[in-house]
Image 1: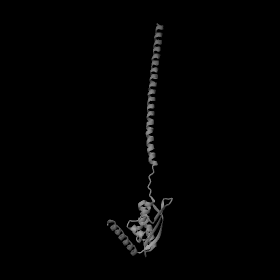
Image 2: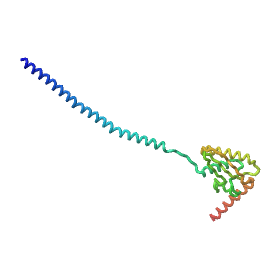
Image 3: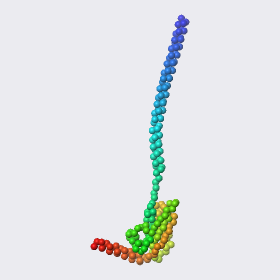
Length: 201
């Protein structure tokens, strides 16, 4: 009887050990599955990461393109010379730019190059040196005209381009009376009318 009980106890212990082993196997079996699931999640996250980083890199490339593209505003010497010439003509007692009497009559009527008599030089610090040759009205004070030219040219260049003037050199090419200027202007207009009449005849 005691032997039977002993066997029963041994069987129960054995059954308990087998059940424990089965539980351990179940846990062990499920653990790899869970681990594999975690690995799968990690792989998925890893797979997503490059895509995300690629988007970030593309955005960074766009930002770099914007940073690398520098805006600029430049002026041709011809534009600066034209502004200077037109500003100089606004000064009282300046009858015309470099040239003879006929030339400045023509330029007053728009028949001559507006930049004639003007040259500009750009310095290393992006300032402008202006050289101007003019014909002024006889009897007027040249130094006062010079001051007016400097003020007008400096103002116009600053207003229109933002450029700073480093220096202005004004050369008086000739002096002409208003009477002589008006007479030459009248003759020039008459000659143009005569040419038109001949062309239409």
